[in-house]
Length: 190
View 1 (cartoon, one colour):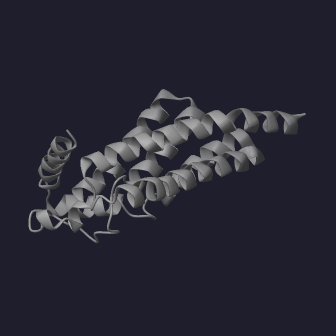
View 2: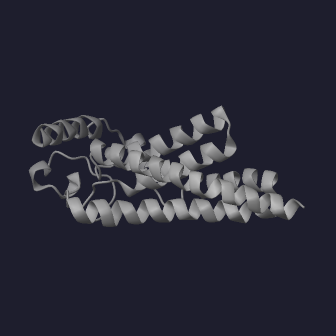
View 3: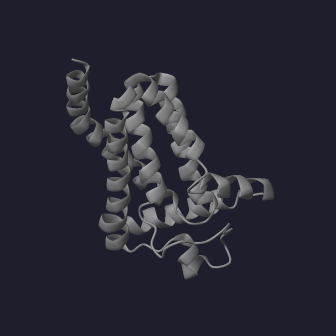
């Protein structure tokens, strides 16, 4: 069963990775960049600050905790345990991959980009409580995650499992932190 899923994952990867053009190469490389989304982060912080004023710091600490957990768990409990080679490091796929940019670390299961972006997207969706904000945030996370397949550095399974991990972490941090933060906010209003 595992071999069948791995074969299916590889075939889907080759299909998705094979859909490329010069235009999309630059778009996907841009989408995967660490600093690319900095203006979006500032906009999201602005919306939090507009509503919560100085208490924004509590929400930002919770979001930072989501990213810290998603990043560290994706590496230490998945990549360093499963040791699944990234497609761009897999010698069986040499010459079949359209690699854009650098390959990255040796192992790819699960995608830290997917875990981080979906963790933040789910947490902020719960914070904003807006259907349109949720749709936009999940679309953003999906786009960033897909870019990892397009660039040749992750299998679809890496991205899907990373998205699930990040979503779980974002939800759990929300459940644990939201009541405490709201209590703190109500104390400062008195």
